[in-house]
Each structure stands twice: as structure tokens, then as C-alpha cells.
Image 1: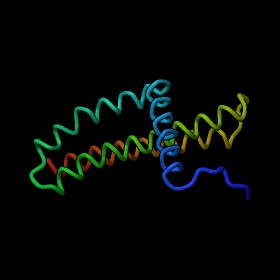
Image 2 (image 1 turned 180 degrees about the horizontal axis):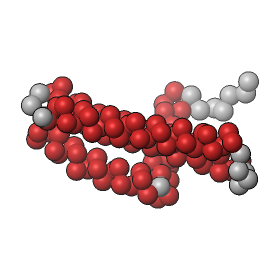
Image 3 (image 1 turned 180 degrees about the vertical axis):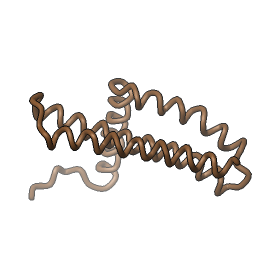
Length: 119
């Protein structure tokens, strides 16, 4: 297997650049991701204010980051499925539905944890 020449610090910097490009692409092209970023912007100060312990604050903030992670993965699956072809295929539909289900579960997780911690 040929080496790309990116090792050590250079590899870490390149990985960071690719990650930043992915975040920017998600924000630019995915409405749901934009909405969830704004939820994060609101939720972090709320969590820091309302959480009584470090653990509570971490749980509240962590659920929003988890939602963003799942949304990114869902968007990646959708992009790959859309890239492969526009024709309807049972497996493509199933993949998209499963990604959507993962986002829904992440949202339910966020709501349940916020309710349990705050009430």
C-alpha cells in the first residue's frame, strides 16, 4: 500500500482541514444541521447555567453534540446514496430511513436526558 506522505503532524493538520471542510459543507447544505448548530449555541449556555454539577452540564451538552454527530453521519449516508444514483432502490431507501431513524433517536435521547436532569 503506497503512503500518501502525510504522517505525524502533517497528517493531523490535513485531517483537521478535511473535518473543517465537512463541517462547513454540512452547515452550508444541510438545513437540519444548521438548526442543530443553533440549538447547540443556545443549549451550551443553558446547560452551564441550569446544570447543577459538572456531570449534569456534561450530559446536557453531550446530548446536543451527539445529535450533531448523528446528523453528520446521516447526511453523509444520504450524500453517498444520492451520488450512487437517482433511481429508487429498496436498499438506498432503507439506508436513508435508518439514518433518519438514528437522528430521531438522538433527538429523543436529548429530550429525555434534558427532562430527567432538569426536572
